[in-house]
Length: 473
Image (cartoon, rainbow, N blue to C red; front, side, top):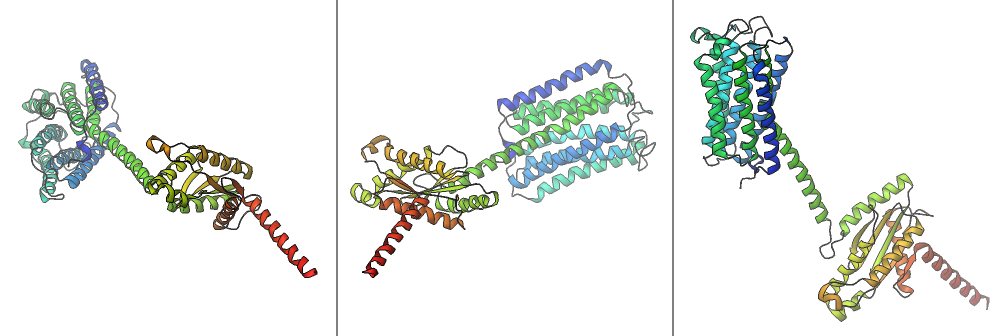
Protein backbone atom coordinates (compact mmCIF):
# COMPACT_ATOMS: atom_id res chain seq x y z
CA UNK A 1 0.00 0.00 0.00
CA UNK A 2 1.49 3.38 -1.06
CA UNK A 3 0.17 5.54 1.74
CA UNK A 4 3.23 7.75 2.06
CA UNK A 5 2.62 11.45 2.19
CA UNK A 6 4.53 12.24 -1.00
CA UNK A 7 2.52 9.77 -3.07
CA UNK A 8 -0.66 11.79 -2.71
CA UNK A 9 -2.15 12.47 -6.17
CA UNK A 10 -2.02 16.02 -7.48
CA UNK A 11 -5.47 17.56 -7.77
CA UNK A 12 -6.52 20.35 -10.11
CA UNK A 13 -6.16 22.80 -7.20
CA UNK A 14 -2.59 21.69 -6.60
CA UNK A 15 -1.72 21.85 -10.30
CA UNK A 16 -3.15 25.36 -10.48
CA UNK A 17 -1.06 26.51 -7.51
CA UNK A 18 2.10 25.00 -9.00
CA UNK A 19 1.34 26.48 -12.42
CA UNK A 20 0.85 29.96 -10.94
CA UNK A 21 4.13 29.66 -9.00
CA UNK A 22 6.01 28.52 -12.11
CA UNK A 23 4.44 31.22 -14.28
CA UNK A 24 5.34 33.97 -11.81
CA UNK A 25 8.92 32.69 -11.66
CA UNK A 26 9.25 32.64 -15.46
CA UNK A 27 7.67 36.09 -15.88
CA UNK A 28 9.93 37.55 -13.17
CA UNK A 29 13.01 35.99 -14.80
CA UNK A 30 12.02 37.35 -18.20
CA UNK A 31 11.56 40.83 -16.71
CA UNK A 32 14.96 40.72 -15.03
CA UNK A 33 16.83 39.27 -18.01
CA UNK A 34 17.50 42.58 -19.86
CA UNK A 35 18.83 44.09 -16.61
CA UNK A 36 20.79 41.07 -15.43
CA UNK A 37 24.26 42.55 -16.09
CA UNK A 38 23.44 45.86 -14.43
CA UNK A 39 25.47 46.41 -11.21
CA UNK A 40 23.49 46.75 -8.01
CA UNK A 41 24.20 47.76 -4.43
CA UNK A 42 26.36 45.45 -2.36
CA UNK A 43 24.34 44.15 0.58
CA UNK A 44 26.77 42.30 2.86
CA UNK A 45 24.01 40.59 4.85
CA UNK A 46 22.28 39.18 1.78
CA UNK A 47 24.60 36.26 1.09
CA UNK A 48 24.60 34.88 4.68
CA UNK A 49 20.81 35.13 4.74
CA UNK A 50 20.55 33.43 1.36
CA UNK A 51 22.98 30.61 2.24
CA UNK A 52 21.36 30.01 5.62
CA UNK A 53 17.92 29.88 3.99
CA UNK A 54 19.03 27.36 1.37
CA UNK A 55 20.98 25.24 3.85
CA UNK A 56 18.07 25.00 6.27
CA UNK A 57 15.31 24.47 3.68
CA UNK A 58 17.30 21.89 1.74
CA UNK A 59 18.34 20.17 4.96
CA UNK A 60 14.77 20.04 6.27
CA UNK A 61 13.55 18.71 2.93
CA UNK A 62 16.24 16.03 3.01
CA UNK A 63 15.19 15.06 6.53
CA UNK A 64 11.47 14.84 5.67
CA UNK A 65 12.19 12.80 2.55
CA UNK A 66 14.42 10.54 4.59
CA UNK A 67 11.56 10.08 7.04
CA UNK A 68 9.37 9.01 4.12
CA UNK A 69 12.02 6.47 3.16
CA UNK A 70 12.16 5.14 6.71
CA UNK A 71 8.37 4.71 6.66
CA UNK A 72 7.87 3.27 3.18
CA UNK A 73 11.24 1.73 2.30
CA UNK A 74 11.01 3.17 -1.24
CA UNK A 75 14.47 3.90 -2.70
CA UNK A 76 13.18 6.98 -4.56
CA UNK A 77 12.84 8.84 -1.25
CA UNK A 78 16.37 7.94 -0.24
CA UNK A 79 17.63 9.19 -3.62
CA UNK A 80 15.72 12.48 -3.38
CA UNK A 81 16.83 12.93 0.22
CA UNK A 82 20.40 12.49 -0.99
CA UNK A 83 19.92 15.16 -3.69
CA UNK A 84 18.72 17.70 -1.15
CA UNK A 85 21.43 16.76 1.35
CA UNK A 86 24.00 17.31 -1.41
CA UNK A 87 22.72 20.85 -1.95
CA UNK A 88 22.57 21.62 1.78
CA UNK A 89 26.22 20.65 2.25
CA UNK A 90 27.48 22.60 -0.78
CA UNK A 91 25.45 25.70 0.17
CA UNK A 92 26.94 25.96 3.65
CA UNK A 93 30.48 25.33 2.43
CA UNK A 94 30.09 27.91 -0.33
CA UNK A 95 29.10 30.47 2.30
CA UNK A 96 32.21 29.68 4.34
CA UNK A 97 34.56 30.12 1.37
CA UNK A 98 32.79 33.04 -0.28
CA UNK A 99 35.09 36.06 -0.61
CA UNK A 100 34.35 38.88 1.79
CA UNK A 101 31.95 37.03 4.10
CA UNK A 102 34.28 35.62 6.79
CA UNK A 103 37.59 36.64 5.25
CA UNK A 104 38.68 38.60 2.18
CA UNK A 105 39.37 35.44 0.14
CA UNK A 106 37.23 32.92 2.05
CA UNK A 107 38.07 30.38 4.75
CA UNK A 108 40.13 27.18 4.48
CA UNK A 109 42.55 28.67 1.98
CA UNK A 110 39.92 29.32 -0.66
CA UNK A 111 40.94 31.22 -3.77
CA UNK A 112 39.11 33.44 -6.27
CA UNK A 113 37.83 30.41 -8.23
CA UNK A 114 36.57 28.38 -5.26
CA UNK A 115 33.09 29.81 -4.70
CA UNK A 116 32.31 29.82 -8.44
CA UNK A 117 33.32 26.19 -8.89
CA UNK A 118 31.30 25.15 -5.85
CA UNK A 119 28.35 26.87 -7.52
CA UNK A 120 29.04 24.82 -10.69
CA UNK A 121 29.15 21.56 -8.71
CA UNK A 122 26.02 22.55 -6.79
CA UNK A 123 23.89 23.48 -9.82
CA UNK A 124 25.11 20.58 -11.88
CA UNK A 125 24.94 18.01 -9.10
CA UNK A 126 21.42 18.65 -7.79
CA UNK A 127 19.53 18.13 -11.11
CA UNK A 128 21.76 15.18 -11.90
CA UNK A 129 20.92 13.48 -8.59
CA UNK A 130 17.21 14.21 -9.10
CA UNK A 131 17.48 12.52 -12.51
CA UNK A 132 19.13 9.50 -10.88
CA UNK A 133 16.13 9.30 -8.55
CA UNK A 134 13.96 8.55 -11.60
CA UNK A 135 15.77 5.22 -11.87
CA UNK A 136 15.12 4.54 -8.19
CA UNK A 137 11.38 4.90 -8.81
CA UNK A 138 11.35 1.56 -10.59
CA UNK A 139 13.08 -0.28 -7.78
CA UNK A 140 10.89 -2.16 -5.29
CA UNK A 141 10.56 -1.07 -1.71
CA UNK A 142 13.12 -2.42 0.73
CA UNK A 143 12.81 -3.13 4.41
CA UNK A 144 12.41 0.30 6.12
CA UNK A 145 15.78 1.33 7.53
CA UNK A 146 17.71 -0.79 5.01
CA UNK A 147 21.43 0.05 4.85
CA UNK A 148 21.22 0.93 1.15
CA UNK A 149 19.30 4.11 1.95
CA UNK A 150 21.89 5.20 4.52
CA UNK A 151 24.68 4.55 2.05
CA UNK A 152 22.86 6.64 -0.58
CA UNK A 153 22.46 9.59 1.77
CA UNK A 154 26.02 9.32 3.12
CA UNK A 155 27.39 8.99 -0.40
CA UNK A 156 25.70 12.20 -1.57
CA UNK A 157 27.01 14.14 1.43
CA UNK A 158 30.50 12.72 0.89
CA UNK A 159 30.33 13.62 -2.82
CA UNK A 160 29.37 17.21 -1.96
CA UNK A 161 32.22 17.45 0.53
CA UNK A 162 34.74 15.94 -1.93
CA UNK A 163 33.76 18.34 -4.72
CA UNK A 164 34.05 21.30 -2.35
CA UNK A 165 37.51 20.10 -1.26
CA UNK A 166 38.44 19.87 -4.94
CA UNK A 167 37.28 23.46 -5.46
CA UNK A 168 39.34 24.60 -2.46
CA UNK A 169 42.51 22.50 -2.68
CA UNK A 170 42.55 21.62 -6.35
CA UNK A 171 42.27 25.09 -7.82
CA UNK A 172 45.26 24.46 -10.06
CA UNK A 173 43.43 21.53 -11.62
CA UNK A 174 40.34 23.56 -12.58
CA UNK A 175 40.10 26.17 -15.34
CA UNK A 176 40.04 29.80 -14.28
CA UNK A 177 36.49 31.15 -14.47
CA UNK A 178 36.53 34.22 -12.18
CA UNK A 179 38.51 37.41 -11.82
CA UNK A 180 37.72 39.52 -8.77
CA UNK A 181 33.97 39.90 -8.53
CA UNK A 182 33.42 38.94 -12.18
CA UNK A 183 32.90 35.40 -13.43
CA UNK A 184 32.17 36.32 -17.04
CA UNK A 185 34.63 33.63 -18.20
CA UNK A 186 32.28 31.02 -16.75
CA UNK A 187 29.48 31.94 -19.16
CA UNK A 188 31.57 30.93 -22.16
CA UNK A 189 33.16 27.85 -20.59
CA UNK A 190 32.11 24.20 -21.11
CA UNK A 191 31.13 24.09 -17.42
CA UNK A 192 28.34 26.62 -18.06
CA UNK A 193 27.02 24.60 -20.96
CA UNK A 194 27.05 21.43 -18.86
CA UNK A 195 25.18 23.12 -15.99
CA UNK A 196 22.52 24.59 -18.30
CA UNK A 197 22.10 21.35 -20.22
CA UNK A 198 21.88 19.30 -17.02
CA UNK A 199 19.22 21.59 -15.50
CA UNK A 200 17.16 21.64 -18.69
CA UNK A 201 17.44 17.89 -19.29
CA UNK A 202 16.55 17.08 -15.66
CA UNK A 203 13.38 19.19 -15.87
CA UNK A 204 12.35 17.68 -19.21
CA UNK A 205 13.01 14.10 -18.13
CA UNK A 206 11.20 14.62 -14.84
CA UNK A 207 8.06 16.03 -16.49
CA UNK A 208 7.98 13.42 -19.29
CA UNK A 209 8.63 10.49 -16.95
CA UNK A 210 6.38 11.36 -14.01
CA UNK A 211 3.64 13.26 -15.89
CA UNK A 212 3.38 15.22 -12.64
CA UNK A 213 0.86 12.73 -11.26
CA UNK A 214 1.71 13.24 -7.60
CA UNK A 215 2.31 16.23 -5.36
CA UNK A 216 5.93 15.19 -5.03
CA UNK A 217 6.37 15.17 -8.81
CA UNK A 218 4.53 18.47 -9.23
CA UNK A 219 6.54 20.53 -6.77
CA UNK A 220 9.81 18.84 -7.63
CA UNK A 221 9.24 20.14 -11.17
CA UNK A 222 8.84 23.65 -9.73
CA UNK A 223 12.10 23.17 -7.81
CA UNK A 224 13.90 22.07 -10.99
CA UNK A 225 12.47 25.05 -12.87
CA UNK A 226 13.74 27.36 -10.14
CA UNK A 227 17.17 25.75 -10.39
CA UNK A 228 17.17 26.27 -14.18
CA UNK A 229 16.20 29.94 -13.78
CA UNK A 230 18.89 30.35 -11.12
CA UNK A 231 21.58 28.94 -13.43
CA UNK A 232 20.40 30.97 -16.43
CA UNK A 233 20.32 34.30 -14.60
CA UNK A 234 23.62 33.66 -12.83
CA UNK A 235 25.40 32.91 -16.10
CA UNK A 236 23.73 35.89 -17.77
CA UNK A 237 24.72 38.27 -14.94
CA UNK A 238 28.42 37.51 -15.14
CA UNK A 239 29.26 39.32 -11.90
CA UNK A 240 28.42 39.21 -8.21
CA UNK A 241 25.99 41.69 -6.73
CA UNK A 242 24.46 42.49 -10.12
CA UNK A 243 20.69 42.54 -10.71
CA UNK A 244 20.80 39.12 -12.35
CA UNK A 245 22.95 37.70 -9.55
CA UNK A 246 20.48 38.83 -6.87
CA UNK A 247 17.50 37.56 -8.92
CA UNK A 248 19.22 34.20 -9.37
CA UNK A 249 19.68 33.86 -5.60
CA UNK A 250 15.96 34.56 -5.12
CA UNK A 251 15.14 31.88 -7.72
CA UNK A 252 17.38 29.49 -5.81
CA UNK A 253 15.47 30.21 -2.62
CA UNK A 254 12.20 29.47 -4.43
CA UNK A 255 13.69 26.25 -5.74
CA UNK A 256 14.85 25.14 -2.31
CA UNK A 257 11.48 25.97 -0.71
CA UNK A 258 9.10 24.40 -3.25
CA UNK A 259 9.14 20.80 -2.07
CA UNK A 260 9.53 21.77 1.58
CA UNK A 261 6.48 24.01 1.37
CA UNK A 262 4.47 21.15 -0.11
CA UNK A 263 5.65 18.75 2.58
CA UNK A 264 4.80 21.15 5.40
CA UNK A 265 1.39 22.02 3.91
CA UNK A 266 0.43 18.42 3.36
CA UNK A 267 1.75 17.36 6.75
CA UNK A 268 -0.42 20.03 8.38
CA UNK A 269 -3.39 18.80 6.34
CA UNK A 270 -2.62 15.24 7.35
CA UNK A 271 -2.64 16.19 11.02
CA UNK A 272 -5.91 18.08 10.54
CA UNK A 273 -7.47 15.00 8.97
CA UNK A 274 -6.00 12.80 11.67
CA UNK A 275 -7.42 15.05 14.38
CA UNK A 276 -10.86 15.03 12.74
CA UNK A 277 -10.74 11.25 12.33
CA UNK A 278 -9.73 10.88 15.97
CA UNK A 279 -12.58 13.15 17.05
CA UNK A 280 -15.08 11.11 15.04
CA UNK A 281 -13.63 7.87 16.41
CA UNK A 282 -13.90 9.10 19.98
CA UNK A 283 -17.45 10.27 19.36
CA UNK A 284 -18.37 6.97 17.71
CA UNK A 285 -16.94 5.00 20.63
CA UNK A 286 -19.04 7.19 22.97
CA UNK A 287 -22.28 6.37 21.16
CA UNK A 288 -24.84 3.75 22.08
CA UNK A 289 -24.91 1.08 19.40
CA UNK A 290 -28.70 0.81 19.24
CA UNK A 291 -30.03 4.33 19.62
CA UNK A 292 -27.07 6.38 18.40
CA UNK A 293 -27.13 8.72 21.41
CA UNK A 294 -24.26 8.96 23.89
CA UNK A 295 -23.68 5.89 26.03
CA UNK A 296 -23.47 5.47 29.81
CA UNK A 297 -19.68 5.72 29.96
CA UNK A 298 -19.75 9.06 28.14
CA UNK A 299 -22.51 10.30 30.46
CA UNK A 300 -20.63 9.31 33.62
CA UNK A 301 -17.47 11.12 32.53
CA UNK A 302 -19.07 14.27 31.16
CA UNK A 303 -21.71 14.57 33.88
CA UNK A 304 -19.00 14.68 36.55
CA UNK A 305 -17.21 17.43 34.62
CA UNK A 306 -20.40 19.46 34.19
CA UNK A 307 -21.23 19.16 37.89
CA UNK A 308 -17.70 20.22 38.87
CA UNK A 309 -17.97 23.19 36.53
CA UNK A 310 -21.28 24.13 38.09
CA UNK A 311 -19.74 23.96 41.55
CA UNK A 312 -16.90 26.30 40.54
CA UNK A 313 -19.01 28.84 38.63
CA UNK A 314 -22.30 28.75 40.52
CA UNK A 315 -24.27 28.23 37.31
CA UNK A 316 -27.35 25.98 37.59
CA UNK A 317 -27.45 22.43 36.24
CA UNK A 318 -30.59 20.42 35.49
CA UNK A 319 -30.81 16.66 35.09
CA UNK A 320 -33.76 14.84 33.52
CA UNK A 321 -34.05 11.11 34.12
CA UNK A 322 -36.38 9.55 31.52
CA UNK A 323 -37.99 6.10 31.53
CA UNK A 324 -40.08 4.52 28.75
CA UNK A 325 -43.41 3.57 30.32
CA UNK A 326 -44.36 -0.13 30.58
CA UNK A 327 -41.43 -1.13 28.39
CA UNK A 328 -41.28 -4.72 29.63
CA UNK A 329 -44.92 -5.24 28.73
CA UNK A 330 -44.23 -3.50 25.37
CA UNK A 331 -41.42 -5.98 24.68
CA UNK A 332 -43.50 -8.98 25.75
CA UNK A 333 -46.43 -7.90 23.58
CA UNK A 334 -44.73 -6.74 20.37
CA UNK A 335 -41.37 -8.53 20.54
CA UNK A 336 -37.81 -7.39 21.11
CA UNK A 337 -37.34 -6.04 17.57
CA UNK A 338 -40.30 -3.76 18.11
CA UNK A 339 -38.85 -2.81 21.49
CA UNK A 340 -35.56 -1.85 19.87
CA UNK A 341 -37.43 0.20 17.29
CA UNK A 342 -39.34 1.90 20.08
CA UNK A 343 -36.13 2.89 21.88
CA UNK A 344 -34.60 4.29 18.68
CA UNK A 345 -37.76 6.24 17.95
CA UNK A 346 -37.86 7.71 21.46
CA UNK A 347 -34.13 8.58 21.31
CA UNK A 348 -34.60 10.38 18.00
CA UNK A 349 -37.56 12.32 19.31
CA UNK A 350 -35.69 13.38 22.44
CA UNK A 351 -32.55 14.37 20.52
CA UNK A 352 -34.54 16.56 18.16
CA UNK A 353 -35.73 18.71 21.07
CA UNK A 354 -32.27 19.59 22.40
CA UNK A 355 -31.30 22.80 20.65
CA UNK A 356 -28.56 24.24 22.89
CA UNK A 357 -24.99 23.27 22.09
CA UNK A 358 -24.03 22.03 25.58
CA UNK A 359 -27.22 20.03 26.26
CA UNK A 360 -26.77 16.30 25.72
CA UNK A 361 -28.75 13.07 25.81
CA UNK A 362 -27.41 9.66 26.83
CA UNK A 363 -28.79 6.19 27.24
CA UNK A 364 -28.63 5.54 30.94
CA UNK A 365 -29.45 1.86 30.81
CA UNK A 366 -32.13 -0.43 29.38
CA UNK A 367 -35.14 1.74 28.61
CA UNK A 368 -33.85 4.73 30.62
CA UNK A 369 -32.34 7.91 29.15
CA UNK A 370 -30.81 10.93 30.84
CA UNK A 371 -30.61 14.54 29.67
CA UNK A 372 -28.15 17.04 31.13
CA UNK A 373 -28.91 20.76 30.77
CA UNK A 374 -25.93 22.89 31.87
CA UNK A 375 -26.70 26.48 32.80
CA UNK A 376 -30.45 25.83 32.86
CA UNK A 377 -32.77 27.34 35.49
CA UNK A 378 -35.30 25.02 37.20
CA UNK A 379 -38.37 26.48 35.41
CA UNK A 380 -36.64 26.25 32.02
CA UNK A 381 -35.60 22.69 32.78
CA UNK A 382 -39.22 21.75 33.54
CA UNK A 383 -40.31 23.33 30.25
CA UNK A 384 -37.71 21.29 28.34
CA UNK A 385 -38.81 18.15 30.16
CA UNK A 386 -42.42 18.74 29.11
CA UNK A 387 -41.31 19.25 25.50
CA UNK A 388 -39.41 15.97 25.62
CA UNK A 389 -42.40 14.11 27.07
CA UNK A 390 -44.72 15.47 24.38
CA UNK A 391 -42.21 14.71 21.61
CA UNK A 392 -41.85 11.09 22.72
CA UNK A 393 -45.63 10.68 22.92
CA UNK A 394 -46.22 11.96 19.40
CA UNK A 395 -43.12 10.46 17.72
CA UNK A 396 -43.75 8.56 14.51
CA UNK A 397 -41.46 5.82 13.24
CA UNK A 398 -40.35 5.49 9.64
CA UNK A 399 -41.09 2.77 7.11
CA UNK A 400 -42.81 -0.53 7.94
CA UNK A 401 -42.36 -0.05 11.67
CA UNK A 402 -44.90 2.79 11.60
CA UNK A 403 -47.54 0.23 12.66
CA UNK A 404 -45.82 -0.27 16.00
CA UNK A 405 -47.74 1.60 18.71
CA UNK A 406 -46.26 4.70 20.29
CA UNK A 407 -44.78 4.70 23.74
CA UNK A 408 -44.88 7.34 26.46
CA UNK A 409 -42.21 8.40 28.90
CA UNK A 410 -42.05 9.50 32.51
CA UNK A 411 -39.50 12.14 33.48
CA UNK A 412 -37.91 13.05 36.78
CA UNK A 413 -36.47 16.56 36.99
CA UNK A 414 -33.81 17.81 39.41
CA UNK A 415 -31.78 21.00 39.52
CA UNK A 416 -28.94 22.42 41.58
CA UNK A 417 -31.20 25.34 42.48
CA UNK A 418 -32.59 26.42 44.90
CA UNK A 419 -30.87 23.90 47.22
CA UNK A 420 -27.60 22.60 45.74
CA UNK A 421 -27.00 18.88 46.39
CA UNK A 422 -23.68 17.89 47.86
CA UNK A 423 -22.53 15.72 44.93
CA UNK A 424 -23.28 14.74 41.36
CA UNK A 425 -24.65 11.41 42.62
CA UNK A 426 -26.98 13.23 45.01
CA UNK A 427 -28.42 15.32 42.18
CA UNK A 428 -28.98 12.19 40.13
CA UNK A 429 -30.69 10.52 43.09
CA UNK A 430 -33.08 13.48 43.33
CA UNK A 431 -33.97 13.05 39.65
CA UNK A 432 -34.48 9.31 40.24
CA UNK A 433 -36.81 10.02 43.16
CA UNK A 434 -38.78 12.44 40.98
CA UNK A 435 -39.00 9.78 38.25
CA UNK A 436 -40.31 7.26 40.76
CA UNK A 437 -42.95 9.78 41.82
CA UNK A 438 -43.97 10.33 38.17
CA UNK A 439 -44.51 6.59 37.76
CA UNK A 440 -46.51 6.40 40.98
CA UNK A 441 -48.81 9.17 39.72
CA UNK A 442 -49.73 7.24 36.59
CA UNK A 443 -46.74 7.73 34.21
CA UNK A 444 -46.54 9.87 31.05
CA UNK A 445 -45.78 12.96 33.09
CA UNK A 446 -43.00 15.21 34.42
CA UNK A 447 -42.34 15.55 38.14
CA UNK A 448 -39.71 17.79 39.71
CA UNK A 449 -37.59 16.74 42.64
CA UNK A 450 -39.01 19.60 44.71
CA UNK A 451 -42.57 18.37 44.14
CA UNK A 452 -41.50 14.81 44.96
CA UNK A 453 -39.88 15.93 48.23
CA UNK A 454 -42.95 18.02 49.15
CA UNK A 455 -45.20 15.04 48.49
CA UNK A 456 -42.96 12.82 50.60
CA UNK A 457 -43.01 15.36 53.43
CA UNK A 458 -46.81 15.54 53.28
CA UNK A 459 -47.12 11.77 53.28
CA UNK A 460 -44.70 11.52 56.18
CA UNK A 461 -46.61 14.22 58.04
CA UNK A 462 -49.96 12.48 57.42
CA UNK A 463 -48.57 9.16 58.62
CA UNK A 464 -47.18 10.78 61.74
CA UNK A 465 -50.53 12.48 62.46
CA UNK A 466 -52.37 9.18 62.04
CA UNK A 467 -50.04 7.46 64.46
CA UNK A 468 -50.49 10.26 66.96
CA UNK A 469 -54.27 10.01 66.66
CA UNK A 470 -54.06 6.27 67.32
CA UNK A 471 -52.09 6.83 70.47
CA UNK A 472 -54.53 9.51 71.63
CA UNK A 473 -57.37 7.04 71.49
